[in-house]
Image (cartoon, rainbow, N blue to C red; front, side):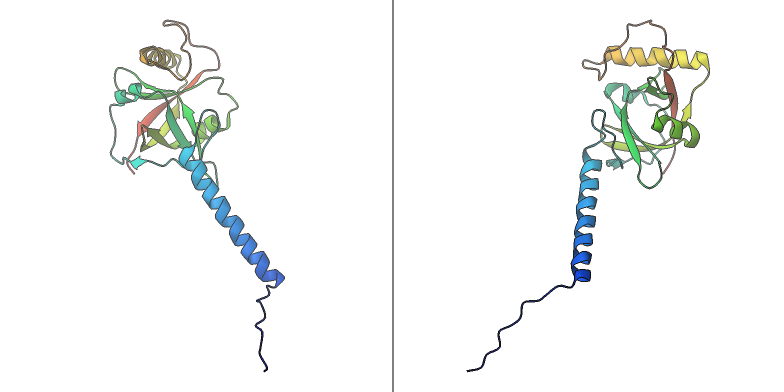
Length: 181
C-alpha cells in the first residue's frame, strides 16, 4: 500500500520575515492606541487625544475652572504630542494654559511657533489656537486667574501658591482661542 504522507509547509526566510514584520507592526499599532487612550498621564506625555469632538466655537471657557487638569495636543511631526496642564479661565471667560519653567520645553516652543492645538476637557476635545502672552499686565491677570482656580478646587493637581503672590520668573501662559473644526 502506497501512501503519500503530506509534507508540512515549509516557510522561506522571506515569508517568515514578512510575517514577523507584520506582527511587529500590529503590536506597535496596538501599543500606540493603548498609550494614546491612557496618556498623557501624570508626567508622561501622550499622543493623539481621544474623546468626543466639539467643533462648535466656545466663547466662555469658565467651565474649565471646574476641571483639575486639561490635556493639550500639538503637532510635532509624524506623531502628535499631548501633555497635562493647568488651564484656567478669567472672569471674562478667556482661557489660558499654565507653564512653569517653560523656556526650553519642547511643547511650548512648538506651541509658540505654530499655535495649532487640540484641547481635552472632561473627555471633550476642542480645536483651538494658542498664543503665547508676553504683555506683563495680561500675564499678571492670568496668574491671578490661575491662583483663583487652584484655590477653588478641593484637590488641585499642584499645591497652589498663596493668593496674591507675585508671578514667578519663567512662568509662561498661552491664551487659548476656540476655532471651528
